Image (cartoon, rainbow, N blue to C red; front, side, top):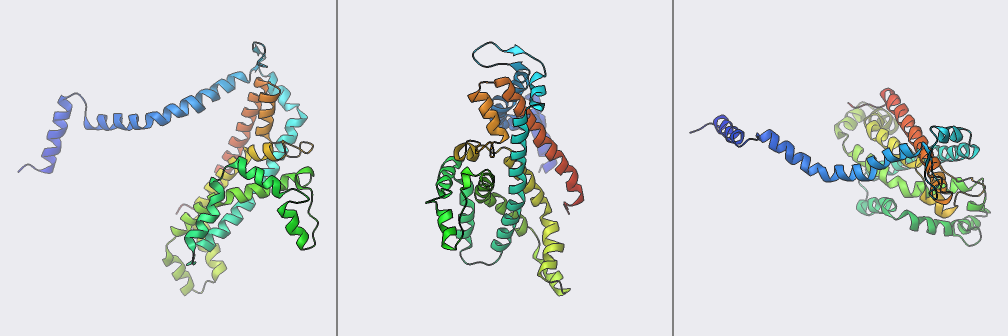
Length: 310
């Protein structure tokens, strides 16, 4: 009776006589499987990025042929006071949203990681805002923020608080967008944290309890360190998505009042599709890429000091 090694050698020999080894055939099959995704990436992301980089070196207003101007768009961007405003607004939104999102999503994940009655319902309810359409949600929240008949100010009036004119007040417009972003986005990170919590061995908590550790000590010494990889991923994803805010600002405030909610992506839209300055809009897009890339690199460097993978 032929051994397993002899059968494998015979199979490989026959495949070799046909011209392709088993490893080669498996490699070809793997490349064919990823080909549709790669084509989608190349057509809808890679090629537009390359074209955008080239377009940022031109002055093109759609109605006339593009004119090569080199780095002038980037020089103009550095001197543009409105760009500094939208950059500050975007950073304000990101640094206001990310800590709140992490705290709320982590707190809910810790709560849902217990033996809670109706656990499936709560998980579904908290994750549901993530999959809702941003346009529809923004229109609903715009009505909720209405100063006279909106549900938020009506609820505040019931406890004796006079609510602000949320979307028309430069002081409150951006916090209003942050609250909406928190409501819509915390469910995603909650799922990430919940998956990380369920991967922590229960024996570690049992050993800590035997040693006399209280709840806070178990959280600080066991839960938080072992959850740090999931937290790092959540921070990265939330920062990136925060810097790309567009729908809420466009629908709810159109960048107002007084550019208080004008963000980088909205500024790209305004220059490209309202002012028809395609080259300048492309330069802004690459400036946004540089900002996000820099923050990601900083976080990758900082994670060596607080993320524990073992």
